[in-house]
Image (cartoon, rainbow, N blue to C red; front, side):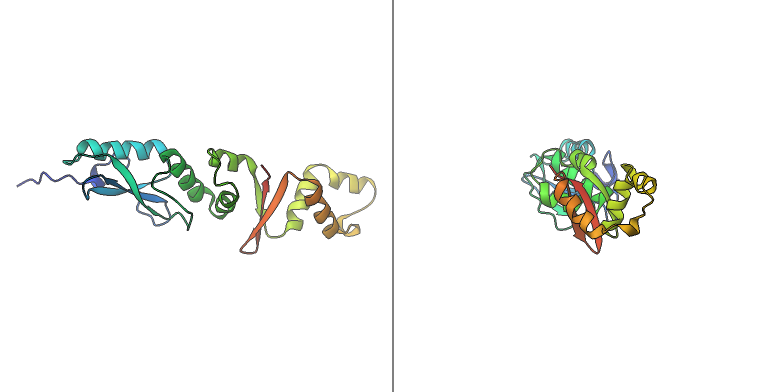
Length: 185
């Protein structure tokens, strides 16, 4: 005898990735206890899965986000737009700690993921490494060589302090002994 029960986990148009590191949401149909965990890293896939649950469910009622998983302690709310939830989920999934630091500073930005991609400048073990790399890209290394100087002739700590003070558009955040560099908005 064949069962007529609806199993959302096997029939979703975009199946859920059951790895534990993927941000997911539990979507629940109003007026029932009917729902499923879905990936929260692509807004269109989320929307299609929610529509599928609503149209194939034996119950009536809208499908809404009710729980969050793997958002790394980020404050989330069910009333957030699906597109915003997906941006945060994708940012955490693809960029990890760097995105979480950025989100802590700019959580109200509607286009948080594209802004992050534009503003994130990199991660290094020491601020000195980043400043040297940046100055080398700007040709400062060549100027040192032309003047028969090297990095050891410079007080790099003073340069770092002045550089972050003078370049108001750049800031740094520290986490787990790593330095994350961002353009300031």
